[in-house]
Amino acid sequence: MIKLLICDDHAVVRSGLAMLLHGKNDIEVVGEASEGDEAIEMSQQLLPDVVLMDLSMPHGKDGMTATTELKKLLPNTAVLILTMHDDDEYLFRAIHIGASGYILKNAPHDELLSAIQSVAAGNAYLYPTATKRLMSEYLVRMKQGGEESGPYETLSEREKEILGWIAKGYSNKEIAENLIISVKTVETHKSHLMDKLGLRTRPELIKFALKKGLLTYE
Image 1: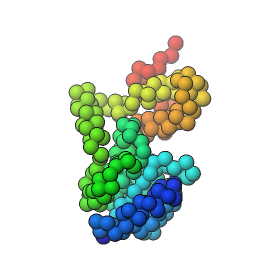
Image 2: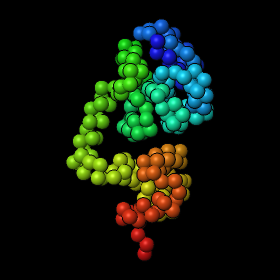
Image 3: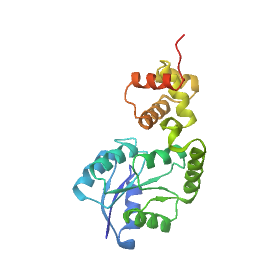
Image 4: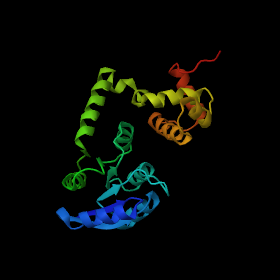
């Protein structure tokens, strides 16, 4: 049996998924969590084979953060992201932090069942159009120099833009006003780019920006 833990902030979604999946294709739903911290705690107790993880959970720890921590605590537990976000940035970020799969909430039931079975068997799973985009991204990076291009090349254009603003001393609020986006969006991009670059402090970021020629002193 595949032991499955479902994590989603909507009770109706959790119960619907549990009814759909329990007993199907040798799947046993062993628990339901409403946010990331609860998913981590329950996973340590129940030791599921697969955690079906939502990304956007406003009340409590979000899916990305929970997945990162969960993979450190239980590296053998597969995390399958189930989300409404058909977005390259979320997709690449999920893969980067160790998720075994990424599938959209509007996927057919049979596809979801296949995805769960696949990650439980130790394989990776991406929905079809995501696979094409991932391959395209890989080919682009290979043309740019592959691994030699470094972590900076893994940043999205928006992340590179925000990196430049941060390095010049602008606050999150000032960046948001200049780019006409929300402060929360700036914070999300900042968190992603810091993780991708392996940086933790502003001085480290400024030093990196100087090396890349993104910042010069008059």
